[in-house]
Length: 190
Image 1 (cartoon, rainbow, N blue to C red):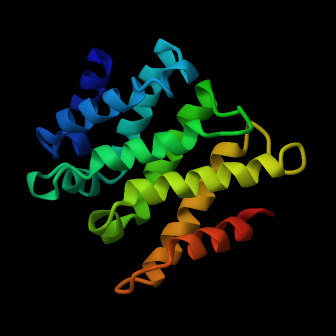
Image 2: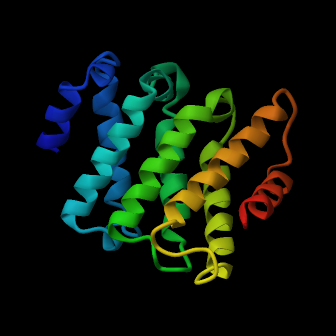
Image 3: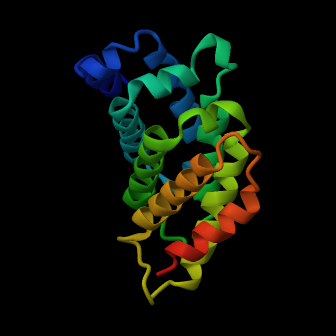
C-alpha cells in the first residue's frame, strides 16, 4: 500500500484527482481481498493488481474521480466488484496471477476509455459481471483453438470494448443487455 501511495503521489494525473485516490485505493484493496479473488493472487499479485488498477485510473482520472464523487453514491465499488466476480468465474482457470492482473488492468482501462455516462446511469457492475462471465465461458470453448493464457486478457478486453461500443450506440434507449452481450461475444470469437 505504501508503494502504491508513493507511486500515486508521483503521478500528476492521480494527484490532480485529489483525495479521491484514497477512495479508489480503498475500493480496489477491499475488492482484491475478497474471498473469491484472494486465492487467485499472491500478496505480490494483489499489490500488482492494485498498481494495475491505479494505472487504469491514471489513464482517465476524471472518469474515475466522478465514480467516487459524493453525489454518485460511490459507483466505483459495485463496478470493481462486478468486474472481479466476472474474472473469478473463469472456467479456463487461466486467469490467475499475472494473467488476472493484466485482465483487471485492461478491462478497467477499457471502462475508463469508453464507459462514459453508461456506467454512471445504471447498475453497471451487474452487467459487467455478466459480460465478463459470458466472455470467459466463450473463451473456454475456444481454449487451445484460438485462446490461451497469453491472449485471454486481451479477449476479455475486446469483449468489454465491443460491449461498451454497442451500448454507446444505443444511448438514450434502454439497451437489451443480454442481446448486446450475445452479439458482442459472437463477434469476438474469431
